[in-house]
Length: 319
Length: 244
Image (tube, rainbow over all chains, first blue to last red; front, top):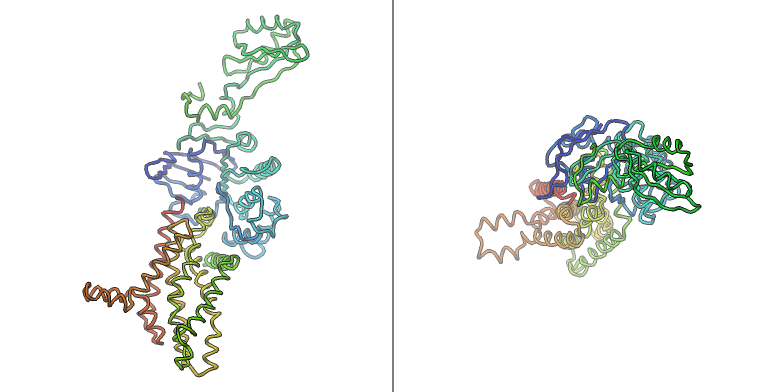
């Protein structure tokens, strides 16, 4: 549904987006990650037709954005990063205006506005001027204007920014519900959000894609992926240590005394494979009691840092 | 066409949500009346016409039109609403025209509110209503042309103050271009051709010719083409500067 082919955008001598190619099919929710200034907003603005690329080609639903911007904009719902609306209008008047500008009229318009108001829970503030709304409500109005025409493609630039945890949850649920027959691109700094609602995560830095995979696969690149935490009773602590020392597939990263006379072993596998089964098996053979055990799935945050921090060493993601 | 109507409607309604609009209407109506009676010596002239009323319109517009046009694009760019506006399935041309027509209609409302002047002269005597109608048209046209200049300059900046000041300067210049004072001052320095050129671009000349009741297509064409050029320039400026 959305295709970018070798898209570059320059501002003067600064290259914001550098030869970027991307394809987002129907039904996919793409989480767009990257540090501030990585080119996320510029990319989204180019897809939505607000900015024109310096080079390259963007097509949305089969239409070239450069050649047929008005037709492309019909298919897109776009929520800008600064989702400012006309402050002196009421929420209802504003949504009506957007619906009309998007070609809806009469009962179709009324239905569309009614639906979006219900979906985004705006009915409490319908007759309030937008300038009197809280930040969270203003963002929701911004989201509502992107959804009112039920677009095929949704481009949301930090949709949950400034919302409280409950509101964030509502938005996530909404997006999960919407994703069935749309292509959605969401940029965010909240990494757990990517895990919660995206089927694909793309990390960009300095205008280039540095990682592109499912959120789960990205998490598995994390340093702490498959790290095992095992709680052993104090009286068996010495024996457990010997067992772990003898195992060649892992290292003991940390041993710490916990309350209730027990020791927590942090075990790091040497490879990328899980060592849980081996550990459980080895301990059982020695009749060592396992009081508790959990596995670290890894953190997207670590991956994000490893690939975008200024002092990173470039690593091969699949090494 | 439909989207142009939707945009114009919103913009027009938008004027009445700000106090600036009401202040504009008040100032325009009261000032145009005051100037007619005091500076224009309406009664002293002893004639049932509105010449002393229309004579001051260009000068009123020089100050008041920038106040209407300053927020057109500068405010959209400052607040960031331009991003939402320009991702609607509407061409930039429609956006520019929508804002322009709304502003022009708003000035039309201000002109409409001066109708008591017309009623007054009709009560006092029997004026040539054709001339008055033409003068209203002339006044409306010159307002539209100033607005097109204001639209372009408002698109150039994020600051309403800068938009206001630059539009005012431009309007003063355009009004002065054909004035006798300027022509006299330059007559020693410039050649005949340059003076003629200045005169042909002078708004006052075209305005006064219309207010005399002569419908010259050239005057009409002057205002229409002048506005078109500046509206087209607005589109170009917007497409270049919208994201900066």
